[in-house]
Amino acid sequence: MVCIMRKWTYFRSFFFFFSIVGPGIISAIADNDAGGITTFSVAGASYGYSMFWTIIPLALLLIIVQEMCARMGVVTGKGLADLIRENVSLQLTVLLMIGLFIANFGTTVAEFAGIAAASQIFGLNKYVVVLGSAVVVLFLIIRVNYKYLERVFLALCLFYVTYILSGILAHPDWQTVGWSMITPAVQPLLNYWVILVGILGTSITPWMQFYLQSSIVEKGIKISEYVYAKWEIILSGIISMGISFFIMLAAAATLYPHGIHIETADQAAIALEPFAGQLASLLFAVGLFAAAFFGAFILPLSTAYYICEAFGWESGVNKKYHEAPKFYIVIVAMVVLSAAIVLIPSVPLIPLIIFSQVVNGLMLPFVLVVMLYLINKEKIMGEHANSAFYNFICWLATILLIIVTMIMVGMTLWGFIQK
Image (cartoon, rainbow, N blue to C red; front, top):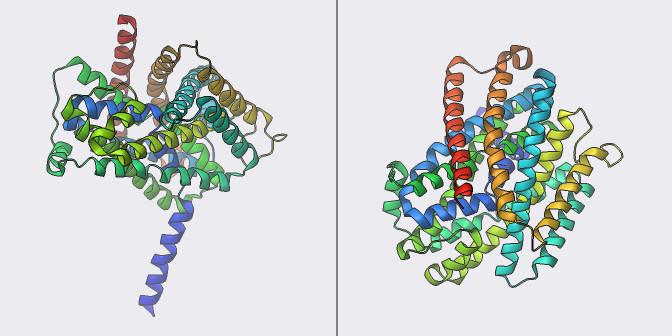
């Protein structure tokens, strides 16, 4: 009887875990957006397996940062922007929101640019596909409640399997790959460091933290359920960086040995065909479209969450338009303007996207430091504040990320000025 009860407890915990799944895995996987795919593809094509050692440390950093956000959301029942507004100065809150809006808007433009690029690989009219995607995004966010919208997001996560298949079809040398994962192979080349910093910068972004905490609040996860949310964070960090690994693998095993250099993810998809076959190329392109489409949902939604929270406005997908008008206005404005900009031939997309990356890089240190300040306030977190040992790990990770993002900003600006 005891054995049966124990098995029932395990099964119940197992099924309850899957009822909690959503916020963590969506925010982590969505970070492999059009920009992230481009960065990892370029890394693999340019330097083969030599950057694979970054995957495990990045997975740990991602888990640490997201775990803090998830814990704050569960304990306080408030989004990150809400907590910043209530516990930090209003002036800093406004400045953060302005910076984050600029960064998210530029990234949303990059997502629609990714949709346009992927559609052209399939020989489709980019105007029809981009406009159609914008309509679908707005319709689902406005008309569908959070429970069903989350299922749409989880379904989109499944499309990232295409990158795993592309990596396998590339037929890499698995022994070399395994060794590269645990052996840093740093090269004394400026471009190597530019790409390396880009990898670190694209793996952990400010919008992820705001989206994760807001979605946990909207899902209504309780403190008694946090252990399941914590396991989801750990699992999602591993899966997210695993996808990044396979994106880089597909390019490293095929393009690098033949000296083929690329600058964008769609170029990587096309270049794969002669070496890994048409199926691998097709899967990579499908993954690019799905990732960009996914990002076109998440970025406007994340932006609307934190802007409304910061100014005390009603927000949430479960609310009707008349209950949270400003929330939906932000989403509609971002989607419509981003799609329109991508379809205007004369608009210089590259400077806009580069500028948004720079702003993102400047915002991340502030967001991380504010997060650490909030999670250590006993008034907010009580017994769930960071322990001394965990604080040491978090501050170490934060300082590393601050250094990396500052280098990324400097290199990005220098490269842009040189051009």
